[in-house]
Length: 248
Image 1 (tube, rainbow, N blue to C red):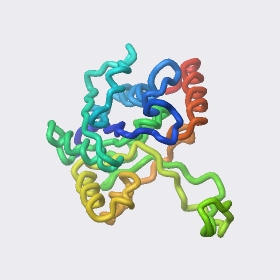
Image 2: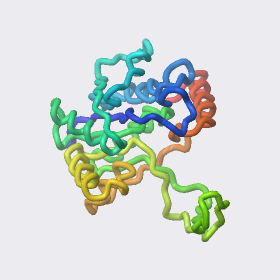
Image 3: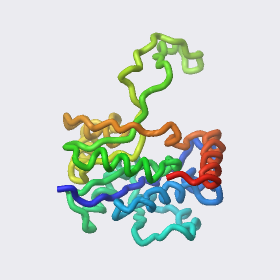
């Protein structure tokens, strides 16, 4: 049984590393709040029946940034149920979906709000690769650079030094969306948050703790997470280039 497809976008973080005066998901990029570029990609995917945006409990900014005219919000729900961590926000979102009509066997695609360069084609690629898989999977990028480990620093202000070079042939950079069965992912997150919350860095890491092995689906280098101040200029340049020459 295939099940329905839901998108879950955790959007409760403060974005402290971004250097902006408001949470980075509301920073203006190419004419709209960053968040709306993310949501537009999911809105363009006919396979996605429902989009849940998980906001912080007292988020005042979402209401101040209405959707662009080209986005029909009929499939979009916003719930002020964010938790203290990303994993808690995702867990709360999954519980909300189950309490509001979703089924444990449905698929859920969890995506970082700040990965605003995701495309409908990449989302569709993930769905097609994972919808008949026993576990599910995630977009990821084979590591392109040489990977180093550092020596322990004698003091907090000591410059880092290389300890070793690691082989990169089997290393991947995890991206989002990450797509799993709703019931399985909720169980994995609940168990992980109870037993080892510090090890739950994404949805796949929670699934892995169940002894399962998610599928790695090649993504795009452009699907990066806007994190630091310089990332905004790069994301805006890509968005403006796409507006000038639309991509699938």
